[in-house]
Length: 357
Figure 1 (tube, rainbow, N blue to C red):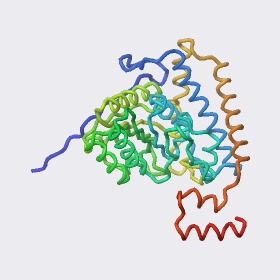
Figure 2 (figure 1 turned 180 degrees about the vertical axis):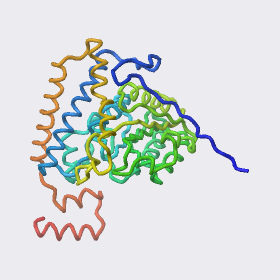
Figure 3 (figure 1 turned 90 degrees about the vertical axis):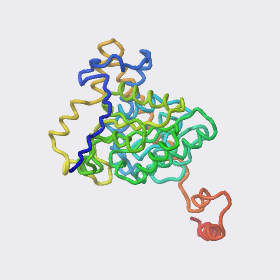
Figure 4 (figure 1 turned 120 degrees about the vertical axis):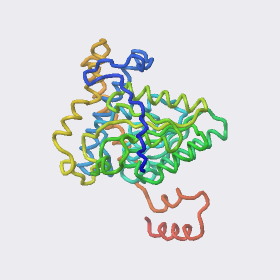
């Protein structure tokens, strides 16, 4: 006799449909008109910044870069629901969240180029540099959250990963630890449907990624990741829950990246159909939220133009500052590793310094 295990359902959260109409008034977050406008400003800013960064990468003026267009709602909405003293643990695509949390954009550009100063987070900015190792930030978030709990600080660790990150052992270890100790953490999975070229259906037999929270004994919710209000509402609830001492939450944001996985040679046309891309283009987070705001007289073409110009100017200023920043040297890199250098590194540093490198 066989036993069939039923899939445990998880809530699906949505506030706006694709036409910008409110479909769940109960979930509508309590945001002022100015806050709603700020969300739109940041999404437009991020879209233009991303387009410029893609061009700069093709010109060889940036190094590693992972495009973000299409994921603005999940990125901007989630960070906006945090406090500045909450701690972000981003993945390598999560540059916008870190920058809006206080990481200077010019340092993000230096990080892209592999310059050590890119990862030297300024004092008072509560984020780690974007993590390259897939899923490693989940375990790190559990550690940061444990520190907050031991210190009795009302702060929350917010970690980001993609759907591919949920296939890593670190993901399960971090969730399990956070659940066992009821830590103040929020784990956000931005499910953009593909781990580079591998679709979600080939990564897991689970119906949703959010239901993986069940094994850790924590709540899991799935949210429309193209709906900035739904993302904000879901993360706000999870952050407040964590801050109140009620433990962690796993949030799966269903979203889509319009560009390649990274600018390092990935070609999405080899594994994505035009039909799929068209389907997700109809869900564009900027189009949806713009319609919502315009229906309320809260967004105009002039507002759009201001956000676009601000983004272009910010990118130009950050690029100029990154270009003018002193070049990295081997002795300088070695100095940044330890406060007191071990003998072997001290010897190597002296050798490089003697060679003028």
